Image (tube, rainbow, N blue to C red; front, side):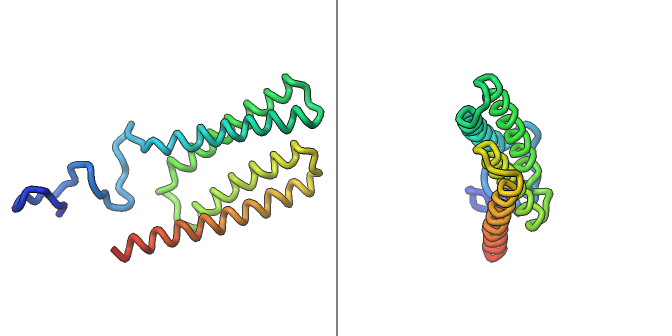
Length: 149
């Protein structure tokens, strides 16, 4: 049963705003704002930084902007898909997916700054592992803290 502010009024279905049981899908068209806002801001930041790095490392202005726009759009799409589907993944897979997205982005940016393929791969791998471990810790802590309530 859910709680009502009126004494003696108990309903068996969730009516809206208030706590929603974990795993309960949201109605279509009502995705939380951060589901699209975070990937958009992150994609814009990554794209602009890619333009800056490419422009400073020998790419023409047009090529730098093309690289930045494509990188930003790919990051936005991957981030949106990851955030939208995060509740369908177990903690370990979700953490690995966040780590892969972050590590791939950092490795790509390092390659644009002139790093070798091997060094860029190493940077991407290390930052991806770091993000994966940090994400796992946050997700695990959050889920177990919610179970204690």
